[in-house]
Length: 157
Image 1 (cartoon, rainbow, N blue to C red):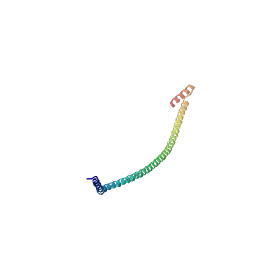
Image 2 (image 1 turned 45 degrees about the vertical axis):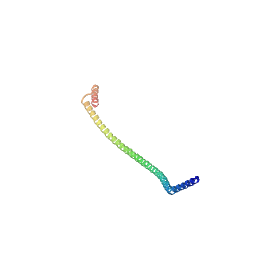
Image 3 (image 1 turned 90 degrees about the vertical axis):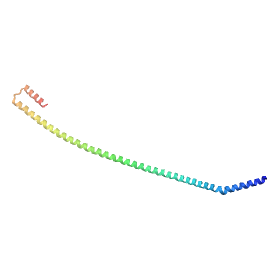
Image 4 (image 1 turned 45 degrees about the horizontal axis):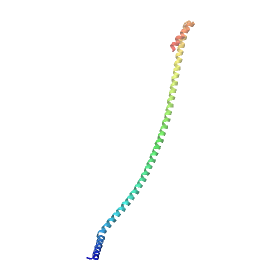
């Protein structure tokens, strides 16, 4: 065989091979590549949508968290204000009750003081009458007078 004929047969075989690959093998490979490209593009789009959804969810979460913090702060402030009002009411009530107790104690003290003075006046009057009776009954000299007063003082003490 001639080198030219071999070269032509090899070229024809190569062309036949290229045609076979282009006709039979190449279309499924291209379809697979296109399908894979579409899947990748779809995956990238889904990932981008997911990223955007995640950002939106994070923003919404931060917004809800800020609202919750504001509500908690408002509730805490209301509780503190209510506690302050309750404390002020309790203090005012305590003052009123303390003043009433002090007034009652003063009235009771006045009553007891008046009763003690009355009892003391009665006892002094009785002792004075007793001393006067003894003085009238006996003839007094300084010694007897001193003895009577000492006895009355001891009785009274």
